[in-house]
Image 1 (cartoon, rainbow, N blue to C red):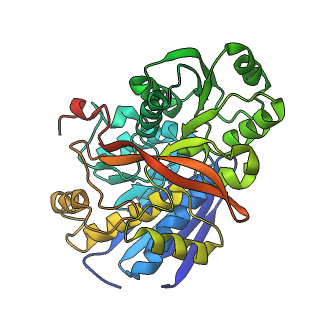
Image 2 (tube, rainbow, N blue to C red):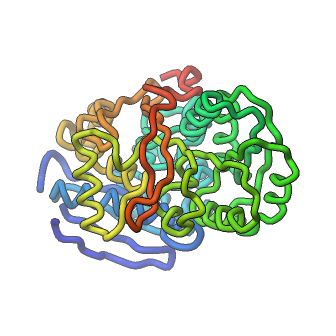
Image 3 (cartoon, rainbow, N blue to C red):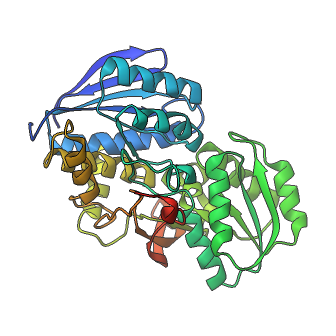
Length: 381
């Protein structure tokens, strides 16, 4: 790997500058992500996936400055302003949470900066709020739950209890599930973002008459819920998008999640040429299996690197065209952007299993193939 130089540490987090072999013109990337507090595992995985791609590329014209938003929208805005005005970054990335993305992205793109999302995909930025400088390299928030809604119909779910945190992504996720699910709703519940006690919600589930539970609780929220649910004795099957059953959560939850079906745009066993080398190299570098957040960070870095090989970031039209081409081998296969610069991609059904001593996911099948988000038609690009 090319040398990693720590330039500075600030009160809000860590800033890294990575000097990485020349291709075109220097590019400076500002990564604002969650590295402390609740949900920090998600940001750490995005950062580590991104930096693995930088290391493998060895491109000395790419500089990365990283800071911790601590999951605080106001702090994220302050960091973005500093990166744009003082650091003179060309591209921003890194945000995990949709409420932070809504606070940062519109202002950043309006100031002539590219923003490439490695995670958050709020509906507002996919439809009427789309922008030529905004790309999403992960998903639109509704996509994975849409896949689970379609799968719920296939397996005969008739009365679903659905639950998510009360913030933009939570609302998008439940809307996505309802868009494809054809059965009844036993209840639709919104919890507090960052909540850790789910006793009241589990009591509601117990009394609801539901034949299944669909939950979107990323990070520590999902860990808390699944542990409490397993202890409750309620045995209604749990489903959800991969955010609630990805590698970091499974490591903490363990056997309680075995058998859970979830939907994702990526799994470590997908048969694409770049996938196995990614999984192997990530595990070798960091001593753990990658999550979907890690692959999104990896793809975001490679998307930038692929554009750098074709155009100068100072020529925004040419660089934008190079980004949209997504000319690199992703662990998810060939990536394709739609008109709103969100990915058109296949959503898979996964099942939580125990593989040796590790809890992980295996791919069961396809929920939605070459799927575009529901808001693309509202985007005038």
